[in-house]
Length: 344
Ligand code: SAH
Ligand code: SF4
Image (cartoon, rainbow, N blue to C red; front, side, top):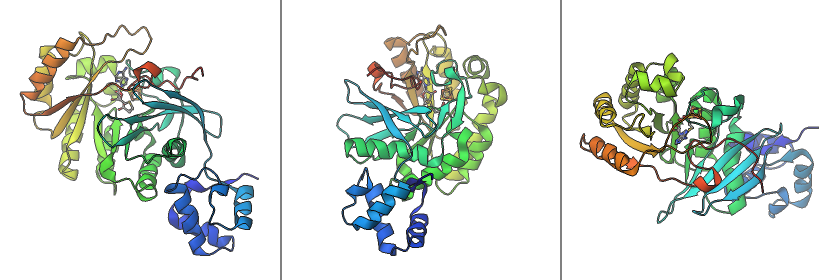
C-alpha cells in the first residue's frame, strides 16, 4: 500500500486525517509542528507523540516523498542539492547565504526541465520532463532545513523550470510556504520569462510574491534571438502586463537583465532599455552571463561595459544592482542548473 505523504496536507487537512485515525486534534498539531517548525526527519524524532501512534505513522505515512540524492558545497558556502522525486526524476535546489546578512535564501525548482528553450540557459537543454507538484516544490525547502537544521527565511522561484507554466502547483506551494513554513509573502520572489496571461492571473491572486521578469533585451529583435517565448508574447505586450501588475498590486517589479558581452550590453541597448522601462515601477537586476558549457557563442560581459551599463541606467533614476554570483564553482549559479548527476 502506498504511504500517505503528510507534507501534502494543510494544517486543517492533517487534523482531519489524524482525527479520522481516532486520535485527538492536539496530536495533529504536535505532528504539524514537528514537520514544519522543528525539522523532524522521521516519526521517531517526534518524542511527545506516543509510541503506538508513531508506529502507526511509520507503517502508513511518510513525511516526504522525495530525498536528497547528492549535495555539493561551494567555496562561498552555497549548497546545491540534487533532489530525487518519487518517480526517480531529479531537480536541483540551491541554498544561499549572503555575507553579513542573516537571510538564508532557497532557490527552488518548479519543473524537471523546461519547455521555454532560452538560448543562454542550461535547464532547457535536456527538454521538459514534468511539472513538480506543490509538495515537491516545498519539500526542497524542508529537505535543506532538515539537512542543515537552519531556518530558511527567503524563497526565490528561480531554479529549474518556468513557474508560470506550472501555475496551480506554484500557487499551492506559495500557500504552503506561507502558512505552514511561516515565510512571509514579502520574502518570496517569482521569476518568469513572461507568460503574459499568467502575469495578469498572478496579479489577482491572494498571495502575490515579488515578480521578477527575465527581460534580457531592450527590444523585440534581440529578445527574439535569445528567448523563443518572445515569438509568442511580444515585448510590447509584456510591458503592458507589467504596467497592469504595477497598478493592480501597487508593487514594484524586478527586471532581470543578463548582460551578454557584445550582444545586449551596449550603450544603445542601455538607452533603449531606459525608454522601454520609463513608465514601469521597477528595480533592475543585472546578471553577468554565466557560461553554460555549450556552443551558443555567448560571452561574459567585460567589467567596464557592465559598470557603464549600470551607470547609464542609474542616471534614469532606477535602482540598479548587479547580481552576486553564487556557487559558480559547483554549477549552481543562475542558468547553470541542468539537473545533471554530480560526481561525488
Ligand atoms: N524560468 C524562470 C526562472 C528560472 S531562471 C525565468 O526564466 O525567469 C532564473 C534566472 O536565471 C532567470 O532570470 C534566467 O534568465 C537566468 N539565467 C538563465 N541562464 C542564465 C545564464 N547562463 N547566466 C545568467 N543568468 C541566467
Ligand atoms: Fe526556462 Fe527560465 Fe531557463 Fe528560460 S531561463 S529555459 S524560462 S528556466
